[in-house]
Amino acid sequence: MAKKLKNETILGLMAIVVLFVMIWGYTFLKGKNIFKNSNTYYITYNYVDELTTSSPVLVNGFQVGTVTDVNLDPEDVEALVVTIEVDGEIQIPNSATAVLA
Image (cartoon, rainbow, N blue to C red; front, top):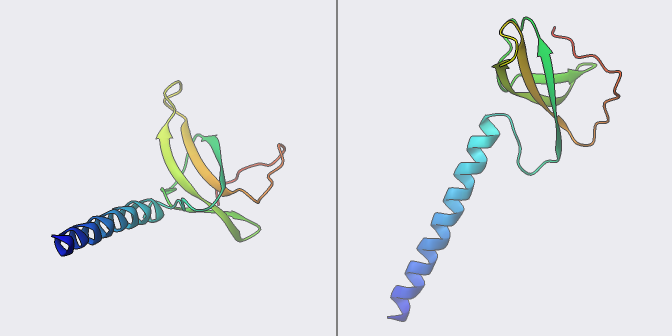
């Protein structure tokens, strides 16, 4: 009886670990690291030529984040709202401008 209980415990722990790794892997492939502190910014554009989820966000050629979502603005059909996640250690001033290149 004790051996059967031990095997069930190990199997349960392995299932929890596998589930956690699957969730982490899915979010990582979407471009977000759940172990890293980040800030979310919403930017409105009229045109986002080939910008997709997981595209890098660069400052002076250095990647500081990723694009996490691109959606139509519900209030203005001609506008697109781009959601980006930037490393929490990066301080972006209020006067910063987001430019597509």
